[in-house]
Image 1 (cartoon, helix red, strand yellow):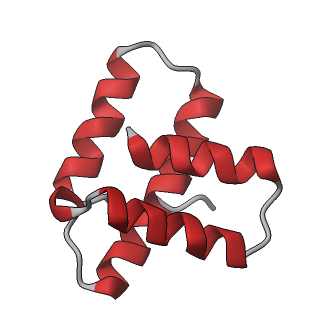
Image 2: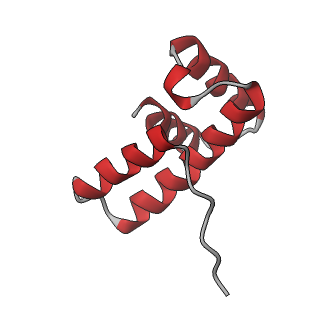
Image 3: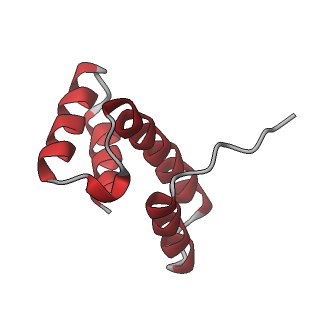
Length: 84
């Protein structure tokens, strides 16, 4: 049984809607949604709203990803989703 993933906070949800409108593939949308959920959880734990995230915040998130030892391509995709 598949459950609905948790909703993203409005700025991130709006970005996903924009990507759907641009005709991104279902696989890309799934990957970016998972990446943005990870970013959203990290921001919430840091007490930062998505709209308040700045370059320094994204550098801190990138450093966090580095501690998780993702493959370079995976980390790059996660950062691409975050920059969007």
